[in-house]
Image 1 (cartoon, rainbow, N blue to C red):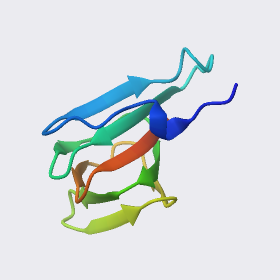
Image 2 (image 1 turned 180 degrees about the horizontal axis):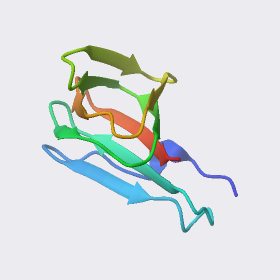
Image 3 (image 1 turned 180 degrees about the vertical axis):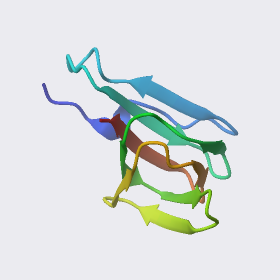
Image 4 (image 1 turned 30 degrees about the vertical axis):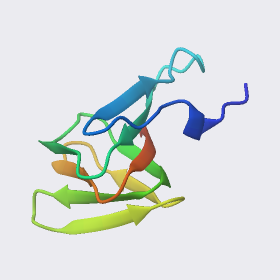
Length: 101
C-alpha cells in the first residue's frame, strides 16, 4: 500500500493533530503520524516500549529527563529506549511518525 505521509495529517493552529496508521497497514505495532504546530509540546512521558521517531518535515526538540536536549529535522531518526522520560517540542511546524516497538 502506498501512502503519501505528509498528506495524512494536517496542521491546525495551536494544536497537535495525530492519526494512527496501524489498522490501515495491518500492523501489530503502534504506528502514529503527528503534526505539531510551532510551539506545541508534549510534556515528559515514558513508555514501556522503545519508540522510533522519524521527522518528516520541520524541527522537533526532544527534552530528556536528564536535562539534555536534541533537535531533529526532516529525515532524521531517533530511538528512545523504553522507560526513558522525554518531552517533545515543535521548534517550527513539524510532522513526524512514531513507531512503538
